[in-house]
Image 1 (cartoon, rainbow, N blue to C red):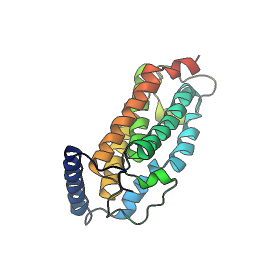
Image 2 (cartoon, one colour):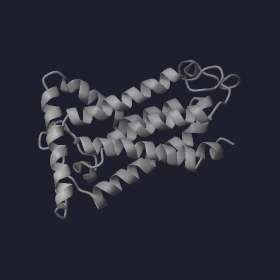
Image 3 (cartoon, rainbow, N blue to C red):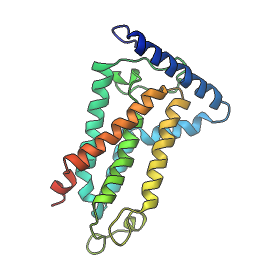
Amino acid sequence: MAPSTPPSPLLGRILAADASVSGAIHTAAKPFLPPSLLLLLEISADFRFSFPVSLSLLLSPPLRPFLHPFLVGLLLDLLLVGAVKLLVFRRSRPAYNHPSMSAAVSADHSSFPSGHASRVFFVAAAVHFFSSASAAPVSGIGYSFLDDWVRDRDGDVKGEVVAVLWGWACVTAMSRVLLGRHFVLDVAAGACLGILEALFVLRFMRLEEIFGR
C-alpha cells in the first residue's frame, strides 16, 4: 500500500536510499541464509506465539511483579505500531518480500515500522531495565526450577539471560531485512520504538512498583 500523499523530495531520497541499501543486503545474504532459519526467527517474535510463551514464563513467582508492566508494554506496542502503520505512514513492503508472509490484520500490509523489531527490542529492554531495578529474593514459597535458569540467588535476572535476549532481538530484527519483510529504516524505527516503550512502562510509569506491592 503506497503512502496517501507523495513524500517530500528529501523524504523521497531517504526512502530511495533505504530501499537500495535494503535490497542490496537482502540480495547479498540470500544465497547464504536458508529461509527456514529466518522464518523460525519470525515465528519466535510473532505476537500470536511470543505472547502466550512469555506469559507462561512470567507466571514464575519471582517474575510476577514484572508481569503487569510486561503485558501493558506489549499491548502498547500493538497500539502504537498499528497507529503508525494505519494513520501516519503507510509504506509498502519490499517487492521481494518472501511469499510465505501471512498478514494477521490489514496493518500488516504496511512496512513502517517493523512490529517484530519493536516487540523483540521491547522484550530485551524491558528485561534489562527490570533486572537492574529489581532484586526480589527468589527463595521461599513458590520457588520453581525455572528460577535457577532465569535469576540468581540475589534475585537479579542473570546477565546471560539478558545477553541472550539482546542477541535474539538484534538477530531477529536483522532477519526482517534479510527475509525481505522490511527495509532497514523500518527495523531501526521499530527497535527504537520498542526501547522507548520499555523505558516508558518500567522507568516512567514504574508499573512494576505499583503492581509489585
